[in-house]
Length: 173
Ligand SMILES: [Fe+2]
View 1 (tube, protein in one colour):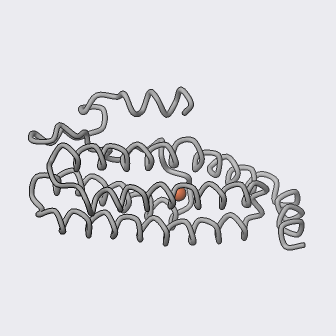
View 2: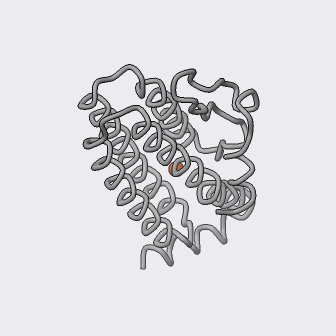
View 3: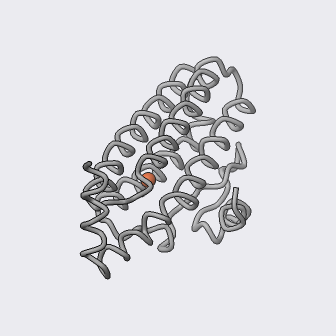
């Protein structure tokens, strides 16, 4: 985990624009302008994932055990759909590290699957809290460490369209 991700994970609640859930003490992620990649579709999906993850923090106290598992499954499914969208955007804009990014997506979904199995077996609020914290950290890490790399790529495509077109041809080969 790089230092930027660490700093974000350690920010206090007022900086996230939220407050800890009183029962579980989980910090909401909220939304930061600096998380935006500049791609409307990707940003809207990121916002929805963050909102879904923050909602999960509140479910820790409110949902029965089976409801918690369903909520985690829905978030995993939303992440999987987002990764498909993101890969399409990366391919269509000639992102040269698209294959590495896809491997990373696969790894994240495998981690989410493990957390889902734990969520379906979890019996108390402490276990739920631990799972939500892990999901929250996974989501922040992927948006900061990997997706901001994508932001630089979009800026590059806008500034150097011919070089970007060459990258697209290479990815299609
Ligand atoms: Fe993403």
